[in-house]
Length: 356
Length: 259
Ligand SMILES: Nc1ncnc2c1ncn2[C@@H]1O[C@H](COP(=O)(O)OP(=O)(O)OP(=O)(O)O)[C@@H](O)[C@H]1O
Ligand SMILES: [Mg+2]
Image 1 (cartoon, helix red, strand yellow):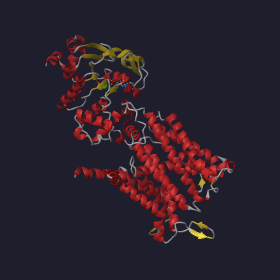
Image 2 (cartoon, rainbow over the protein chains, first blue to last red):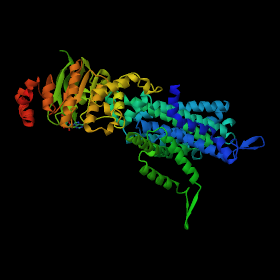
Image 3 (cartoon, rainbow over the protein chains, first blue to last red):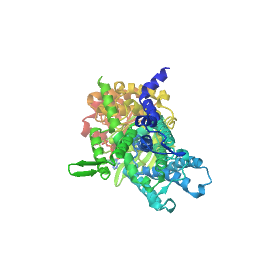
């Protein structure tokens, strides 16, 4: 009884968000008088209406949140800066895309292929993470970052030239199992990615609050002293980048399924830089920061991209100058929230508690 | 008495500079052994070799009779060799308690239990609270280490060393930079640990009255080599030491011993 109260007291915010997100497609549907299932044409649904539109936005937000949470595990909690994270993200998409599209796998049930794709992504991203770690974690700071960037760029170039995935054009995924196809049954994909998002959040929170997570933070704070008191820090850093790689791969699967394609852009350093910026804007080394940073920036991007602003006689196409605007937002946020939105809020609250 | 730590012809060069020059030294079990010497004598480098932070250019380190020259840095803590740092070396954004709790947890087997909360292992928190009390940081236990004043950080430095209860304590200038009125408290803590017995303490310290008062043996280093070794009284009476070190820096060491 007591422990339930304690649990509610500590987690009411997360539970409230959970409930809202479960109901979200229906809430939007109710508010905008659209169906969360889309519009029925003949015997199938097509994805029209506000509810399905917002589902797509949230699915992408879940994918980005998982990606950024995984980046934060490495960067925010363990203090390892990698510039190769997009590689895992893109690989997840390519692995699932190739399994679904390549004719040699056509005999296998598509749902099973998807499941195998998930397992393979976890294994391959884990192994690559471990490999990169072994090869380079002895390098410190910026040298490690450059090494990861180089490996990721190599993978990017490889897939840009890989004929079987149509090189630069990328692979269109058409052989999707119908139950999860975002152009037929987006609601299912919404809930699947929501579950993945929630599980990732819980996993990372438990990990960080565990004895292992305590060592991660020790390494971030002072790796030299962590070694001096007896921690084999390399092992813990390997663990962090391996786990982060796995989750980034899973995020990439959601992204690719939503986009119904696996393209070289998904492997591009842009996703790494976005992860870094979103972590910093949300709050480095916080649990909710990456979610708020990634969702916030994605929503802004999504809502502003097609806007055209007219000031006097000049019109500004926001889509064209998005990167400029993003940079501007970044500077403003960093000035107002030096520890990110969530980090600064937490410090402010802790400060108030101390005073009273 | 049997040796707990022994070095044979231990040498460390940095480029052309010989920081530690063929040092052969025996530290006896249970001793309070101080190492003194002018700035740049190689004391910290010697500690870095004992604790495994640096690999020696030449020579051997024995611990309980075993050659540990090539045992890596992080493994030495597991053998029971703990060290503190001359330049404060803490986890700045973690609380004082968490700093010490991490050190208490380090030698256990729970470090890879990533699925349970740290609160499932109260023994480390209990140990951390004991140590926080011992080094006099109870009131600051829940503050981030970075907000401690310098003296508090030195106490924390000692606390992190003590938490896993090492057999050998290598203390590198524990009072470095502390306000002089805070020094006796910290030395009293070290003396308490010494009197509990069972541990060997090797301490580098510049404060002569501290060294003379607390040590069983003193080793004097200069320019990477051993200049002299003996009891505090022998060191105070040693003419070479007087000339090279004590005389010029601290006046008559005799006064200090008999104070
Ligand atoms: N990592 C290093 N690289 C190059 N030179 C070093 C290094 N560490 C120490 N030295 C040099 O080795 C010599 C001995 O330094 P060390 O720090 O061991 O002296 P110390 O006796 O601890 O002096 P202090 O009393 O000032 O702490 C010095 O000349 C120093 O500059
Ligand atoms: Mg020194």
